[in-house]
Amino acid sequence: MTQKRVSILGATGSVGLAAVDLIQGAPERFRTEAVAGGSNAAALAAVARTTGARFVAIADPGQYGALRAACAGLDAELAAGPDAVIEAALRPADVVIAAIVGIAGLASTLAACRPGVTIALANKEALVSAGPVVLARAAAAGATILPVDSEHSALFQVYEPTRAHAVASLTLTASGGPFRDWSTARMAEVRVEDALKHPNWDMGAKITIDSATMFNKGLELIEAARLFPLPEDRIEIVVHPQSIIHGFATYRDGSVMAQMGAPDMRTPIAVALAWPDRMETPVARLNLAAIGSLTFEAPDPERFPALALARAALRAGADRPAILNAANEAAVAAFLDRRIAFLDIAAIVAETLAAVPQGPAATLDDVMAADAAARRFAAAAINRRRAA
Ligand code: NAD
Ligand code: MG
Image (spheres, protein in one colour):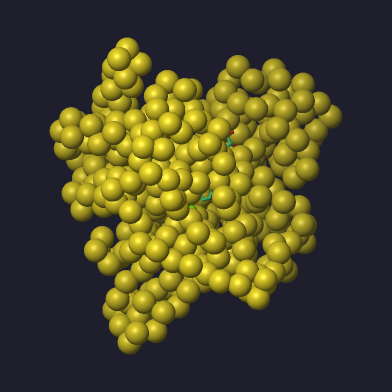
């Protein structure tokens, strides 16, 4: 078996560390070329040590000294700053795991688009904001994008492109998050600690808040429309609190192909890492008898306005998804900083979409301009709430 060279962008995060775990468990299959992280030098050095990465990049230039100290004795090239993260994406690799959170991961995802490279894409924000730009870059470069997001990995496994004409709809499942059955009045009082408690998945802070507001499912709806060429009204969302079925394709003949698995990101990461093969993972085998029952319910658009906002943004196209994503990133950061209330997140996204005039999103410059405009408006909306 030829070894695949893997680079991990966002290596110190929840997805990044899950990928490290898989790579460590299969040294005959993988060797690590580059790892990149944001600002935690000690965590990045630990990853560099366990993976034996040849190139280690930290985005925060102020952490270079700390990284050097923490990597003492390691035979690896060290670099710092946003350009170093791009360099990590450019190192020779067969698979690049794009697991940086937020629009911060866009530039390195684009840089990773090179001939023959498989991009295992966890960074959904890049695809939401700059979908056509990312997909065109990958196609032009001859790179393959494989989804790591569990629902999209599920759809990737059950959707046969050669039978696209036979697919009636695709469905993403949603856990519903920690506030699935809470009233709006109760959600108004939510504290950061409540929102960070996800019932099924252990994830980074930003996506955990997105799961609580259901913006995560809204972003995933747009992500699905980018990856699978189906119109918005044929991509559905169903709440499934056990997170065992991750997604399904409904064929025109009535057959439904679903993908199941324990809620553990190592499975979808393994699908992308080993593709087109499959690999062994330490993920617990699904015991359906022990689980007993799987339940489903329709999402509630009243209590979770994120879903309708995302659907409208997807329908409108152009820069609307980028505006939605940037406003949400700004609002989630403000909520985590305890500067706004939980329900303000969706309100700020809605206000930003209404206030920022629609523009194009055909080029990277367009997308970055839309992102900046949305953040300017959202920052002001956040400040108004703090003053109130
Ligand atoms: P996380 O917060 O745990 O990790 C984020 C990683 O990005 C860290 O390594 C951090 O150091 C790095 N980072 C942050 N800013 C950076 C910057 N400016 N430059 C370079 N690196 C930077 O997040 P996560 O939960 O692992 O999620 C990562 C991405 O994967 C997100 O887009 C998320 O939506 C997606 N995703 C995550 C999960 C999950 O289970 N955690 C599931 C599906 C999709
Ligand atoms: Mg997901």
